[in-house]
Image 1 (cartoon, rainbow, N blue to C red):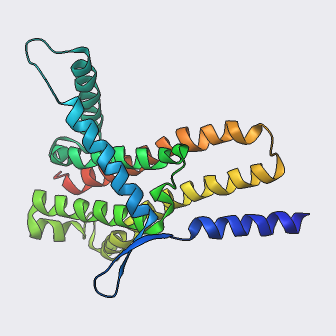
Image 2 (image 1 turned 45 degrees about the vertical axis):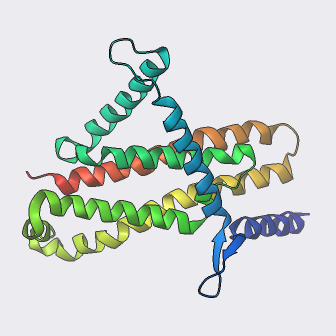
Image 3 (image 1 turned 180 degrees about the horizontal axis):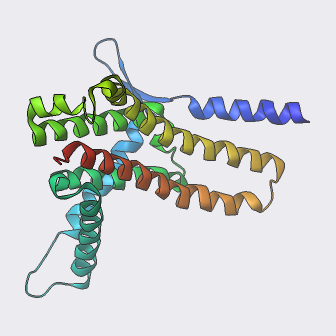
Length: 235
């Protein structure tokens, strides 16, 4: 019985990790377009349509209820990130908000029957690399190239190798934390379906698909914001 459960779980996990090719672009021998890319395009289209609809007929003198809700949400996001990244990092708030919205929707889209793009390690790696590049660029813009290079030897030159190593550790940490938590919730749900297939998986699904998915989006952008604040601090 235990062997069957393990075998079933391994099969489900391997199937989940398998990046399905939806179609191929017929150039350079065929460029595969994976399911995670197509779902990301769908998310982008939905967000674009919502943006167009929500910003129509905005008014300064007579704002509608829709406009007031939208302004409250945008102001809340801006103030939250401003308190995290500090005054020197406010220019990067639009990126942080965009990533938070994307990861949040990507983690919730499983409720509609789509495979969350964040279950594809290629997606989490790309997100982590974008964030780390932005973090280092923010440090260079704030401190200049010499000041940025000098910061690797702070607070004392002996920790220079550790600070350099952090450049490679941070993207790995961001990537594996997001990917591992999303994949871990899938493993737990599959175990619950095998062991207790009645009511419990439905309640746990609400937790992992909604609460945990939003928490992972929050953690990713919160850590990115903290790293940006650290990179742009001048004192």
